[in-house]
Image (cartoon, rainbow, N blue to C red):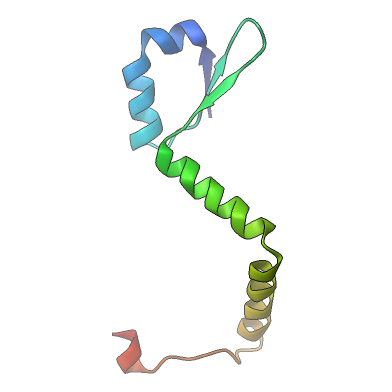
Length: 85
């Protein structure tokens, strides 16, 4: 995570926005008032929202746990070679 002052961010806005988008850098902007904020790409924000949705969804998390059990027992679904192509 990059941390910088609001003045430095403002002076180099395009460069920092490019870093957030191209390099997937999270940027924390520090303000004198103590009310900091975060800049991240829309793609990264959407990914984070999807992750939070899955983690909060009990049904999905149960499916993940069940899948892990079958994987560890090597008893899950096994596609044929044709299906893998």
